[in-house]
Length: 198
Length: 394
Image 1 (cartoon, chains in turn purple, green):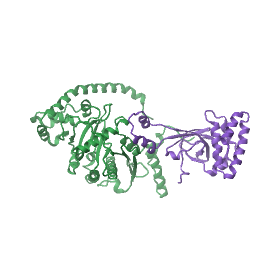
Image 2 (tube, rainbow over the protein chains, first blue to last red):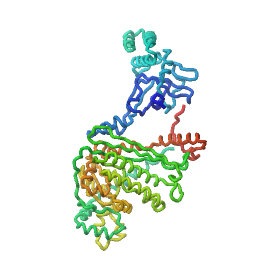
Image 3 (cartoon, rainbow over the protein chains, first blue to last red):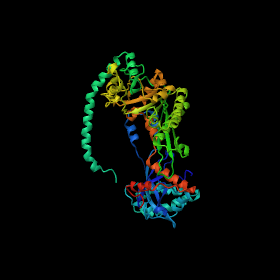
Image 4 (cartoon, rainbow over the protein chains, first blue to last red):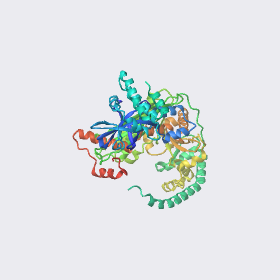
């Protein structure tokens, strides 16, 4: 199993709007904001496509005990930061699903299964999924998430998996779609376009 | 059905009352126990030794190891370059209802170079045992949990001896989350003499390696319930002509613990005198030069008392004994009075129920690939049906 094949965690909570995953991996392998991922649903008949928008580090009782202690040794601190598998929780917004018919950019019919493994989308899958841009409106009206930053991060991820010569064209096409969606809010549009500028 | 808490609540009230009464009765006993220990301490050492000789093999208590019984000792400063290691073990016991008959031992450990600022070296070693010779005793009977415990204890000591060899030449203290005596041997020795001796010899061999590498080893027992020193105090108060079975058994302090006694006598950071454990098990250890001795230590300002067991070659060497004492005190403050390396060793070793379930699933799949019908028994399957309180699938 290569590093890319390895699950980045498992689903702990979910709804059709998204899911929460927990991961116990060393820091260099944590997923990043704006990562496209997939989690199994409908007993394997489909995969929910998610866009990671929040990462948080859970504490545990030992971490709390050490944090409250005035007598922590530097070696103990290093142990916690280097050796201990830190429980990282991430939230993913559902932006589509994959089934026998290919990718669909709409909310999935069912959420993933509890404890379903979560994988990063391969570069090829990201390229295919983001060829169409209907996933952008799905992100717009979700409360309490940094929609604009997420949209910009998703488009940058999508551009990065394309050949260098195609990236600018892709981003220009995406910017036109963004302008169509938020065109009435010029301040927001300007900020978004600045964030995805090649 | 989970634990029926509403029905239990009614039983908790009398339980609380009874325990409070027991505590009050124990507190009333303490002054007399204290006086008895003072009496023992004031006896000439040879008189106390004569009394122990009179009691012979019937006596199950502490023997003085040369230090004044009531003295409290401060720890020396921590040595530069000290390495503190800890090991702990966990297991999956053999289960005839599982997909296959096997058991698992996992030992976790770490070694911390004090003052280096570096993250400790960590190590986890899982082993699965499935061969007939691992699963059956000398008479061909399936082994029980006690034998697995014995093998786990030996593996823990092996991990510590391995660390000691890695750090040979440096001041080194290995901590074990348990006493040093192999108690499983008392449980199963009569039925399994050969098997027990094999494990015991392996364990003592690892102690040899630790000693040869110049290291120290100590077993750390949190919240000890032993009353060995109280037994000594009681023996000291008996008139010589009355040292007999009945008098030894009628120890009025047997409900108390040494911990209660030393929590009054010690100040934070201090240790008690060293004593010799008079368990019959200690004869094997004595014969191999590893006689187990113990002391009590107040590990932190919250007045936590722990029992620390060390081999005679540590207890009898002031440098090594001080090194163990100082290392334990250094390890305890950040984790509330229990050594940090043992907290982490447990975390590295522990096998959770989820781990067990996953392993069982992997074994079942592997057996199927080998065209074997590896299935859990129906009883085990039905227990799994009713264990889960929620459905995961939609």
